[in-house]
Image 1 (spheres, one colour):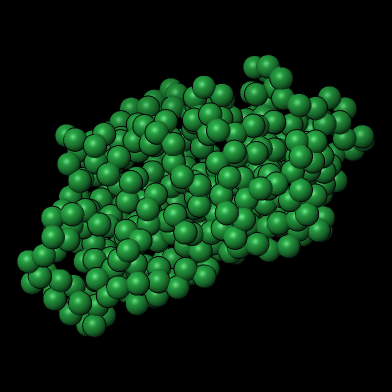
Image 2: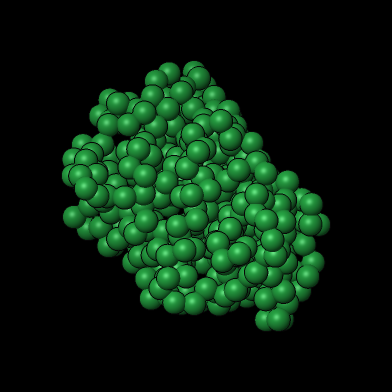
Length: 385
């Protein structure tokens, strides 16, 4: 526990940035479910010029110290693309965010949250939606259930006590995000199998792999479908061109052509499903560093990733088809081919789908229809400033 006055200062300079990253490892290393991120990626996340989020956001990082020792951190940020969205979609005018919270105890956490709120008010914000670390597309929400097992690739993991800290200072639930667990070694229920078989007989439908030799154009196609499919969703913020390029570069090492499917109807790409081998399985024992020999282990794994789990982080069907039977049929067809490939080629036994908004009835129905069960829940909170 921190003893003494909590002093909070803005992050300034290389030493502060290093301290901002370092505290994550110190405070979480005893948690058996925590997966240490690679330090180079943790640093890139908070660095202007490297993370394209800074191209459309104002960000201020803060460190908390007691008697000169770093005891906590937080980010406060305003996403200009988010505040330009319709307020009915969750963001909107006057909405700022904080995230990347780490704190030794409740006193430190409350001081950091108060500082982030103060900064947001100074920038003219009237409402806070948090935690977001830092974009809605990165690691949104505070984990509220599912603490007993590690997160999959690109999902967050925070101690339960942080949820208590957030609730204690007046935040109320804004939206719950769900992830689903699925035993992919088992065939889907007979009804789903019949739907898939019917689609396979339909000459108008084609389910194909992505073509990694045309990676840039395929990535642009997927994100075009995504921006259309998700455009009415709560919390949606469109990807910029820079973010599309950045995401493509980041995903490329773990992308497998046979785990990402594009659905075409009458020759037009109308849906996609992205599945990734769970990189966290190989990262967890590395402690955040590629030295001295972890880089070799990672390169070897990337050549032929054998995993227990694969994750479906993103899928989408063009908006005009979303209320049709075709949309669910395409989803089931993509899931089935990916399920088969994940088991037979990568040794996977488990799939994780999500996150999914708690009130996204279409996606939750698809997840439940194939026998998935909720395994983690994340909460995004709100509070007037």
